[in-house]
Image (cartoon, rainbow, N blue to C red; front, side, top):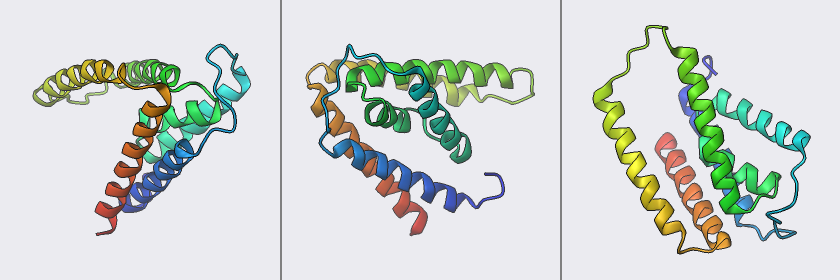
Length: 158
C-alpha cells in the first residue's frame, strides 16, 4: 500500500464501502437468526478478508466489519455492532501494544478530546439505537456508509 498513490487507495476504499452499503440495503434472502451458530471457518475467512482490506487501505474498522458480519456471516445488526466493537477494541489494543516503545509520539491534545467526544457519541448513539428496530438500524447504517463513500470519492476526484 505504501507504493500506491493515496488517491487510488481512497478511491478503492470508497468503492468497497459503497458495495458493502449496497449489499446491506438489499433485502436479505433469509432472516438472520440471533441464535444460529456461525461457522468458525467462515468467520475466520471473513476476518482474514476484512483484515487484508483494512491493512491494505489503512482504514476499515466498523465501517467494513459491520457489513461483513451482517452480509457474510448473517448476524443480526445489533449482534454485528457489538461483535464489531469488541473486534475493534482487541485490534486497537494489539496495535497499541505493537507500537509501544517505538518512539511514536502521541499528541494527547488531540487524543484526549477525540477519545472523550467519541465516548460521549457512543453513549448517545446507544441511546438512540434503542429507538430503532434492527432492520431500520441496518438501513440507516447502510445509507450513512453510502454517503461517506460518496463524499470520500467526490473529495478524491474533485
